Length: 247
Image 1 (cartoon, rainbow, N blue to C red):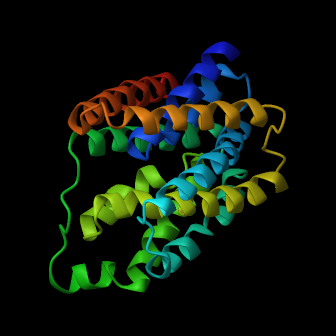
Image 2 (cartoon, rainbow, N blue to C red):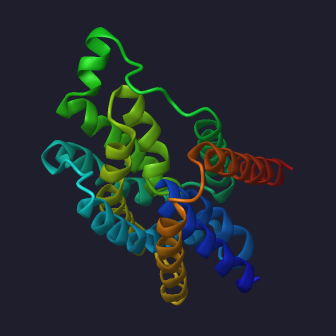
């Protein structure tokens, strides 16, 4: 089982290196393959994504894809992962797994039907592009990250693109945002004892190794094909988790 878990971590790193998303697969992998209870699996998953956030931030900063000043409200909103993690400890595992499955299915939809940039209109679009709008995106996805351990980028990137942020900029902003949600969520999960630190060195090491490989492969794989692969993978996993939990 651990070999399968480590393989998933390597694949997740590759997906993040290729497309900026993939961390949402870590919580279900830990739930299904590690033997940890759902709360600890989610907390450990969120903590493990810190390493990917650091490496991803370094990579995208070098590419000039992170507008730091504009992204500050987004990062501040990500601090909501802390109360999200505290709330996680008081919700039964069943509803949390169902929520996680629904988020994974949402991720599959976004991968199979990528959002169009600038979908908003008029005052609505003006709000979402304002500091308060960007903060709201960070806060909502931060709470969900703390609740499920899924991390923030897979939820916030489609939202940012829809309101008008360039796709590459949205991915770049999501990397330091991942650091914020991981640190804030970890602090909340540690209060409930829901982080297994013994697994973290292997998880983080494999995710980083996969990320390096993904960056190299990014030049050789068509974006459309990659989106279909990620979408189908997330759809199958989300549906399996949902059926397994409801049955």
